[in-house]
Amino acid sequence: MTMAANTLKTALVLFFLLCCCLIPVPSTASLNVVPVGGTVFVGEQGIDITQAMGTDSRIGWWASGAVVGSSAPDQTVTIPNPTSFFVTPNAFAPYTGNWYRISSNGTPDGIAFNVLDPQLAIQAYDTSLSLDRTNDWVPTGDQVRFTINSNLYTIASQRAQGAPVTIYVQSPDGAQYSSVVDAGGNSHSMVDIPVTTNPFNTDSVGISWNTGNSLYTQGTYVIWAECNMNHMKDNYLATGKTISAQVTVLDQDVNPLIRSGATTAPTSVITTAPAIAKPTSLPATITHIPTSLPTTPAVTVAATPVTTSEIPTETTNIQSQPSTPVTTSPGFDAVFCATALFAGIICCRKKI
Image (cartoon, rainbow, N blue to C red; front, side, top):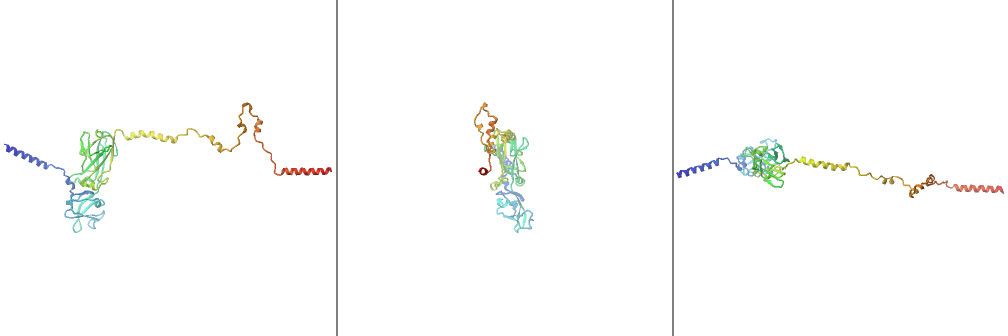
């Protein structure tokens, strides 16, 4: 009985281990295996292109419009080790598209793989209001999902899983989150999310952000995404390619447009008032009179105070005006004297 029990226990253990082996487990190793005609991205390192190369050891690239096979390739690369291939940015970034195997006799031998320049962008979407909130504000308490826009999804059907993309959320105080809490209080990791479509919405895999959770203070959050599949970000760190441009979300209760509108109105009145204000007093015109009128001598009567009883008569007023001197022509007096003297002499002679 004891031996039978031990045999049964051993059989159950072996059956359990066999079942564990049959359970499909995602393999990160499959991310580096490229099938014939598959897609590779600039920056990937250590990928296995054995299937894509077959027995050939060289690949060639023809410019757009060229007839493959009727002319020499514009670019060629020798593959020394197809089990660990590096899609170097210098050699492949300027030459995206199909690369062909080149046989030993120098002729094209079919497509080896397709080189793509990676593209990566992210958006924040308010699912509570069904609005895109990228670089905008979100009412505290709304649910937010992230949308990944990328061409990385193309490997999903070739390498058994989607491209791993990690999303980061930076709080107003500078802390970085690689997981977010949803409306039910559950935390969801945002590390190596397998992107299988374009666009890819994180709520499709249960990832959403409850902005009203007590973990998150109000303020501006910075969000971005990265992909380091096969060290592509390490080798090809470029915004919009292996790392997305950063976007922001302002988490607060009040619409910032309403708040800013209340403060704008008084400012406009204050700044425009001085432009239309009139002077508080008119400039004294008396200060301009002496400079515009000819200078005249002061009247003597005005300089001496007078009383009512001493008001000058009309004659006095006339005398106050300067008399006009009588003038004669130059030399007239001399002629008159000579004439009188001549007349006197004549009279004296007559008497004699």
